[in-house]
Amino acid sequence: MRKGLMWLSTIVVTGTLAFTSGAGLTAEKQRPDFTGVWTVYREPGQARVSGFGAPPADLPFTEEGRRRVDEYRQLLGPEKANPAAYCVDYGMPTMMEQAGGYPIEFIQKSDQLTAIYEVEGELRRIYLDDRHLPEERRLASRQGYSEGYWDGDVLVVTTTDLVDGQDQARHPHSDQAKIVERFSLGADAKGTKVIAYEMVMTDPVYYTEPITVQKKFALVPDGFIIPYRCPDEFWYALLEMRREQLKAGKPADARMSDVYKYRESNE
Image (cartoon, rainbow, N blue to C red):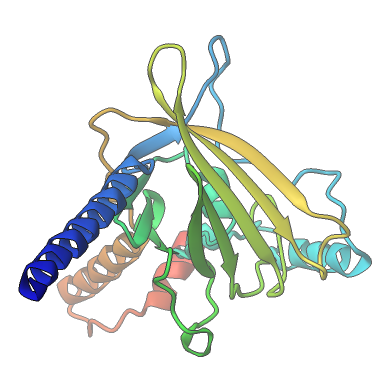
């Protein structure tokens, strides 16, 4: 009799575990999937929208924030230098604000959302749920460290560990900035998949109040990211310079700085 009870208990427990696991898998499958290539969404009748732009004139800068912005503009010099011309990744939040000017691809797994911006193949990893890198192992970068969790059907992402972003295109920031994003998936009247995106950035060094950005992305059916890497151009230009030196019977000793000087002289 006791053996029978034990057998029955095993069936009940196993069945409960199976049901629970099944429910977990079902919930996992029901989460929005952002996988795909996306561009800026245009409302019906709306003209083409560019993902690019300069900093708004009315940003609520602190005195220190304004000082840093003014100094940065002086650092650009007469040629109006920009990091993209030197193959520097855009970083956050520019990567997301300008995404759509060039397409952005999301690849989603259960524990990570990977974002690939077409420009320079810039890569961003958003770690989901319980997959987190310990704080002592995080390295500050232009993209920062991003971790997300699900608030119902909305993916909430917090980004910290940023380096100073005085060169961010629309919203420069300090290394104390914190960015919170919200991604939600829907569709318009025509059935086009649309991501509603919101970003709120706080930075006690640059701003007196939070900065908010809202935009939408539209899915590009069967979209592809095209290779776009300016370091390749510089490398091939260096090889061409050395090839010309060899043809002239000279040592092939051109340096990358020579490539920069040549390009700058022709700007």
